[in-house]
Image (cartoon, rainbow, N blue to C red):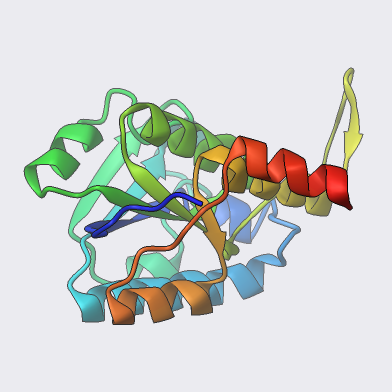
Length: 203
């Protein structure tokens, strides 16, 4: 297991926009109304603990449209920084890495949408940049896909990506467990590739 020894967290609220909550790209798993509640809880806990909150907004959804707007669960709460992006990662051409470095942040706590797209891209890049990360699995979500490569349900996509994250990129936890760690000032451990593989071979 690996972990940041002293977590200095920022909560990264990724693309919690109306397009995912009201359609036409409706989050299916976990159910979007459930994950929205958890996102609000995470923001409230971060605010209470003095953890900076970064709101990320995807501008590829028709800037200015209803679907592009930040959902009220997030918009009604205070945040410390708001960035706009046009690629999946919250880091690309946004200045996020510099903003975090200025505040000596070493751990990113990621909520929002979608698990397998913008969350994954952000977590992968965070790993490459040397950040520890946490993925709040019930404050995030996925949609189903079908294309030339095959078909997968939203639950399958969310579950498989969560397992991959835990193996090398982020501690995967519930919002409740994350809030408890925040209140205790504790880091959250994650697994690694070899341990994850060994456990799979034993089952």
